[in-house]
Amino acid sequence: MTRALGVPQDYRQAADWYRKAAEQGLAEAQYGLGFLYHNGNGVPKDETQATVSAPVMPMARGWTGTLNEGYFWIFLANTRTMDSGLKKQAKDTLESLATVMKKSDIKSAPKRAQSWLNEHPHHLFTEQALQADQ
Image (cartoon, rainbow, N blue to C red; front, top):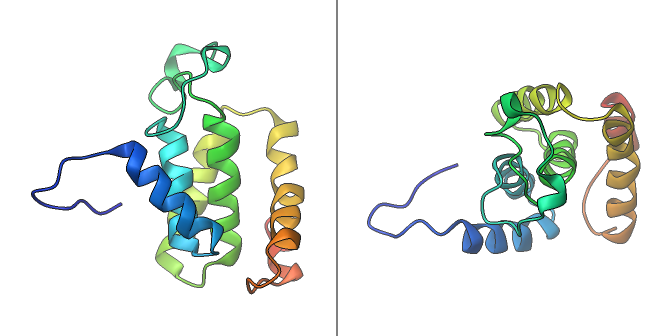
């Protein structure tokens, strides 16, 4: 993610803007939002998620949906982008998240992505891309 010079860092505002752009279908914003969830930045805290083991803590430190939300948005970005650099970044991040997530949560991402796309039909997407990433 890029940083603005001379502007105070505000993860909550970044999450709001990334979410708005992500919901419009911008793959880069979907990745950015997923990465904020991945790191627990700018998203509401939920102590029920705080049971994740210590070695995972920078990635998941008790934030609402940190792992599942992060995985979903990054998965969606990965299936939609044509940018090879972003695709590699997304795949690497998904692999990292997969090491600490439940398999059932990982398997739900393609279904959730398809559901999101059904609710946002104006976004370009191919069924083959979704199936290839399962």
